Length: 316
Image (tube, rainbow, N blue to C red; front, side):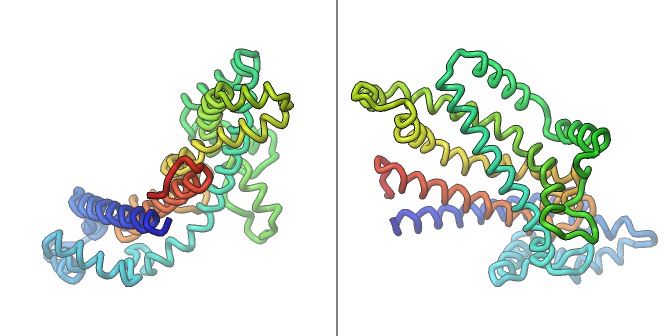
């Protein structure tokens, strides 16, 4: 167990190193680079830009800049934001809770609803419900997330007035109910595509389990359908879905970027777009590393959970 975890942690650290170098190189070699915001300032001469580059150490070779950034990052200094002069870690931490709240809620909705739809579609194969869920899943997978967000705002916020159109809370009202009202629409929109994905995978997984010999044997011994469903079918169907949950993290992060922009949700996705527009490269690089860490931790946790639940998988 310990050997397996240490091996996976080592692989994750190596992958983080590769991701950090590629991200650092792309940001610094992009047109304009980190100095693009200074070049747009009125009256800024090339001599002044060169002086700023020397002060920031941007006149050094790229590999030297990277290892200097990496050395500071390892000791907790992720740099300083160009926009507001605050430490990058502080800027990310101020937006991390909003993203985790949105992602956690959306993931819970998608897993619960998607698994339920998938199981009942498999149990009622080729029924009206199965065909209806198949069509609904294809529609959800075919339409962009931002379109669902705009339609939700138009219907539930502008026309019906049931829910707020955006933001995380109403200024002056920090109650839990107020947070929940603002969370409903972005969480449901973000979960919509994942519900479609989970329902299709869960349907396939459940159909595979239903046709296994141990299920037929249990039924032949007189096991009721209800008990067989919860004791044998659901448990075994969920094992491959744990791996899917880890693989879904990048998709959820990508969807959160769009959803946070549509609903003006103050999370890491919106911060990423704002920082790109301002050429705030230290924050962009910090967000890239934070997102990569979240994905790798999620995948590691999923792999360990599968190995612990399924005795057929050895932790080697």
